[in-house]
Image (cartoon, rainbow, N blue to C red; front, side):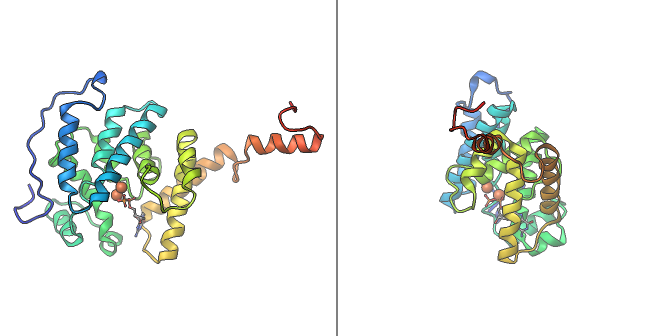
Length: 248
Ligand code: DGI
Ligand code: FE
Ligand code: FE
């Protein structure tokens, strides 16, 4: 669908529409083909493909943890940045060409469009018919209020995958993602907003809505500071004068 000159054009063929069986795991020709296509689409940025595999694997792990379809999570992870290497001006052209709405915020930060455009490519170039996979790709950068479990998984896997190493609080967030996904998302959005404020980047309303939604979610379940049981029991032991591990 993209024209000859567009770097977004990837040599793809129609993938067979066979449905994946659970016992196929990730080791099957359909997924192997997808991996090859994505590698080609990201060939200008070697680290991006490595990141992509990290997100796919991490999404699969989070899917195991939260009872989500592992293959869907893996495929969403694999395709989440498939439009990342399209030059920013071409991203805008492509969105205009395919009738993808571009907001004022996105016009000021064209790289944000890789998420929407990626979701479109997933459907049209990679023939992903499953709308839940496409929407996880669509929302992977900003998130939105009340994400589906699959959207939450890809959003957080993008942040915590093993090759990421710059963000603050990564150790805590990595652990939280497997213990309390909503709280992990709250911390991710909080840190992302702080990072964007420091950098002076314009903030998309969706990013703020994600933050506000997951902040409330955290408050409902944990109280604002999320007092830990370990802290409370350690403090009780202290007050009762009992050594660690011997208290009740
Ligand atoms: O594509 P990746 O680099 O793997 O990750 P991503 O799609 O989550 O993009 C990350 C970048 O997007 C990161 O630098 C923060 C930025 N970002 C997230 N929300 C917003 C945003 N940038 C702007 N300008 N506005 C946002 O609301
Ligand atoms: Fe991305
Ligand atoms: Fe990414």
